[in-house]
Amino acid sequence: MPPVSEMTAADLVLRPATLDDAAFAADMYTELQPDDPEDPLLWRHWWATADPSSTVRRYVALHGGKPAGLAGIQHSAWAKMPERYARVIGEVAKAIRTPERIGALLAFSEDLATRDDARHATTWAWEWDRLRVEVLLGRGYREERRERFWELDLAANKARLEEMTLASRESMRDQGIRVLTVADDHDPEKYRKIWAMSEEASQDTPRTVPWVPTPFEVFMTWLKDPGIREDRMWIARIGDDIVGISVLNYPPERGVVATDWTGTARSVRGKGVARALKCETVMQASALGVDRVRTDNDSKNKPILHINDSMGYRPRPEMIQLIKALV
Image (cartoon, rainbow, N blue to C red; front, side, top):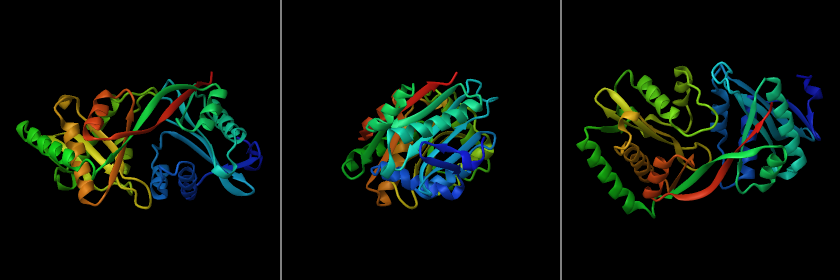
């Protein structure tokens, strides 16, 4: 890469990002999408806990000497993902947001990816963000898949959720499945069991970018997320085995409580475990005074989409994944 002083995109000057820039990133995206506020503490944690074997290059774009955009790439080690997909970043603060500047930052990031021998660039855009979508389409990206977003009004659906939770608890008892929080589970091997089950569940999540295993040490950093607590993390057990998990993330500074992860072992699919766990998370949130919760899922993940609908979740705007061939 050229010296920092020579890194430019349109009328923006780029410098390497630091962890302290995570707050700027959260602020910028919050301003761009105020209905989806981003928490600066969560962003700092995410930036700090990437798999050390992966490649992460982040840059802050300066306008008039002040942070005004982001660029960069992130991808797994090619030995783990020979298809070579790299996620590219290219976004500009609302006050100076133009197609030319977004395009220039995307071009900078695509060049980084190409120099790293990536074969595909992938990025995301809200369906309502026509400016960004049009820039991406103009640069040769194509829509690949969609992520569906949902919101559940806990007060409006209180009776439905209470009835569903009671039925799920009875079903779990009848099947010999224990549902409890991680804080209440005293198995010294519980973290490795949750990790192994989550790895199995993740492999079955619909996706285009190939699944890459998460090392146990990286998985454990998830438990240090500022929005996650073990007494709000629900798991399902059959004997010594942990067969399901669902957890809500509670943003410490700003944002809406939302599902961080729900997954089940293949051995219990179709037995209502995911529904039972999700019910416990939302009932707990309601008891804590939360008025609404959100979640998101791949548009082709039919089982979880059905659960969301049955619980009373209502659709919100979707996100589009776009992909471009680099070679």
